[in-house]
Image (cartoon, rainbow, N blue to C red; front, side, top):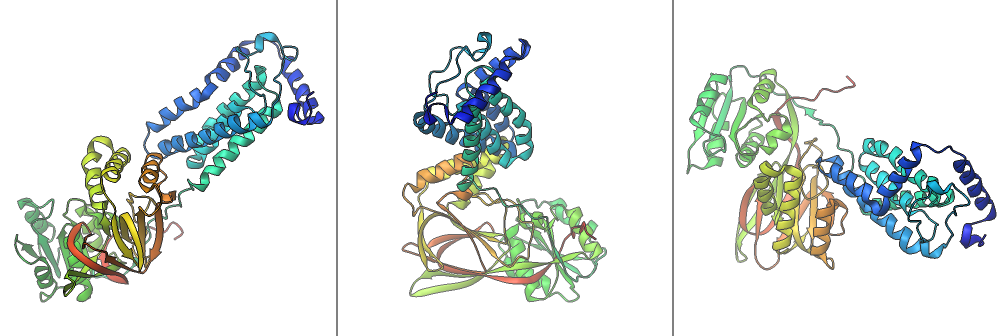
Length: 503
């Protein structure tokens, strides 16, 4: 016995010997080879790195769980081997304590307290389980087997394993400080609105932007077949989209306004629908159709069903007052905002991601596009609500988007009354290195360079050179300032209404 720092308090040492004797009395069998191999496989984390590689091949939660598990394993391994094995020297079990044929070869020479294998096993399992409880439950028996194998093979005393396991769990929990659990994404919710049911398009006036991403000659024929009694007005190249949409909205007998085109055209139609108190029917005719997708009308069949049944919802409306031009000769304009606005490299990031996505899939395309964008571009200097920032991205979502990182994708609620404000700044020391590390590890939302807030009004002002402001994918160069406000539930839109499970 070497005292408290040698083998622990006497009662712990006695209990260790009691348990080891119980293990030694087990008959020789195939389980001895199993635990020896399991112990060897987990040496230096080989087992967990292999499992992480398999998990990382599956996008989504498995990949994030693998990254989180490895991060926790790294913390646990460092703390165990660098700090505690030095601070708590302890002799390992001797051949007199266990049958020689069970001993691991070669016998480790470092301190027995604590068990590094146990710390790594529990850290990886708990870390992965924080992201995916199902994967954590699957890995738990394997981690328990690794921990027990260290006693079975004579490499550690039981208390070493218990202490190492506690360190592993603690390391995994510590990682939540910089990798917090993602907030739960709410189910889609809509506030029903009164809107007339329209059959065969009677009373419906549809503005069609022929420059829309999916427009073809068949488009007009399709709309005429679906809505034979509707007024369908095609906006030709070179015509003023806003003026033509307004003309469609004010046509005599119009009780609802329809629009076929991209998100920019839909925003223009939304402004006209609000101005003339008309419900809006969004027909997905653009390249991406973000607003239609969030509404649940990503196909024309969905839109037809909603307008035929008179299903509609109240939706928030973003208003942007933009000031451009020279300081002594400003030019003011107003823009409707349905989805997002951004300043900085966000449009470049989105373009790269969408170009890579067909070949790589969304998660990997986001990673590659982010590394490329943040690695080569420079930050922009401006003020946001009066505070000066140097930033790579200022992102404004009309409503809360999910997930909470640099690549938001979904918006389940369309009338929450807020702007989702996300800034990725270059104000902090080593900001670029911090950001690239956060992108690789999937921890952008928790990084020090990321700032997530919500607001009902946002004001941005250029410092020096004017800004390029993108609103719903439409770039607006030469912007010196812009004020964003939320028009709460001012827009009525035809869309399917989610079924309330409690009804």
